[in-house]
Image 1 (cartoon, one colour):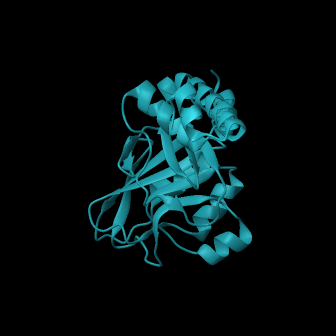
Image 2: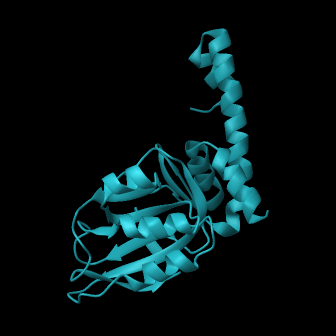
Image 3: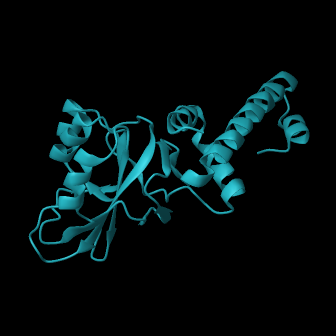
Length: 217
């Protein structure tokens, strides 16, 4: 399935259904830990991952790989930033990076670290950012970007460049690109069955009857 078809389909499927489908199709968990949550607004994100790895340092250097990737990644990407070593209580994303992401038409950002400039981002951009925390602290003298478009771990899940990232208030799910078509097909089927099951439960005024017919909870 073409990328635009996948993005359209995953953009409509329930996050819980996508998570369940990844469990079944991939045989492993695909949803990030609950610490990765929306920090700007409740906007849904859906797009291919463009990844950055940050590592601990005492050098005062800019996050060059991240800055370059924001300009170079394909439009509609979700920028995913991971950190290794040190403490995650710093902002790996802020207002200027948001401006760059908006200018390049990106879908959102997912961060194993903090975000800052929340007032500015909410007021001027409304750009969706899912992050581990909020912090005013800079990465300068604490972290440097070591690489981009490499596998990274965020929220306990390995993210490869090009994996489909889907997130909303229920959480963030990573869909491996190679299995995305199969995952989307199953997620859509789960959504359809759940809608039918919910209608039956309401019509029969019985949760037990809905569970007995569809076997899903």
